[in-house]
Length: 403
Image (cartoon, rainbow, N blue to C red; front, side, top):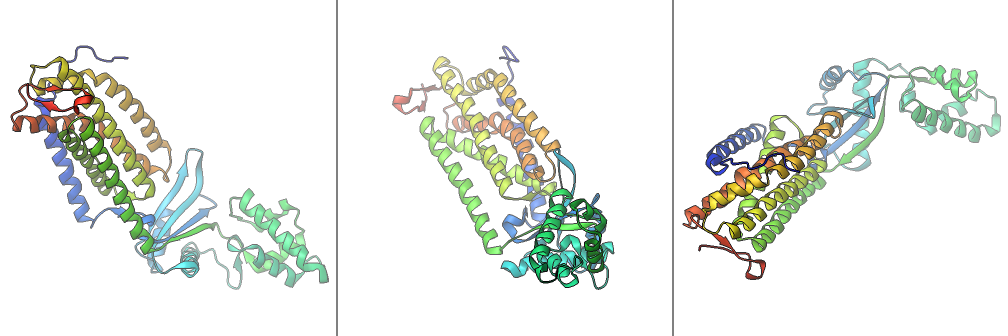
């Protein structure tokens, strides 16, 4: 399929505008990174505690943030969780700075968030436990002590089973949040059991669903590995293109990919998106995508060099980009539409990942004809090899040489 036929755009004549646009984006992004002290690393890289809190209704983000600050919990981020399959999940992820290691840090982070939420939202009752934060053992202990069913010696096993049943109903049927203990009657619980629970528990309008922790050493190691993996990928691509075409083509392609990654990181800083492991996966994806698009253009340049032996290299490059323009628009356009839908409708959890793909598709496609190809032409003209060029076959090493 061809969208355009006999296109005659002077891409190389507009190279200075491409370079100016890229330089502007790099400077603005670099200034943002410097101003913010580097990228915004997620919990995967900087270490800390992530507390997943689910609410009975829409979470009051501003109230939560102010309440955490008033309770002395600073340097936190609150991320609403939603997606198209469950737009009303009423969940937020609260990221705390790293305060320790292991189970103690988990318990401390969970307790700090619970205390701050109770103080902020005013849902606690003196002398009572939060039913939404209670586990089966806590509920079973209360029932055994009060023995509302008058089971006597057999109370232990029966109340343990009943407590598990109540917790399963809370977590699986009510999303972890019970707003009224009378709702437990749906499990078949005896009114006497509910009355005993009401004497010992109150119900808040939120519950902590999950708590995770990443230590600073792990985060530092993940950062190092992410950089190493990216450099290895670029090094492998450089070797491949240098063997397949010529070293200057490989250098140009790798510089264009560096350009794509740096611009993406700059935009992440400007729009305050966090860098996480999923974002690294997206960056590696855009590296491969950009490189693939660049190789398509380079391959057409190689074919045209054999057919247009006496034409200047910039003419050959222009012709090659114009000939692959329909393919570029078709593949990049469809891919961009897909990732754009993912960005718009994928929810907060996938927002940073899909943003990296959206930016990567745009910048990666543009850099293939606006950065990589002009760099090859500029190098050959600087070396005095841009007037006429011919490329030999694979058996001869695919070298570009002057005729």
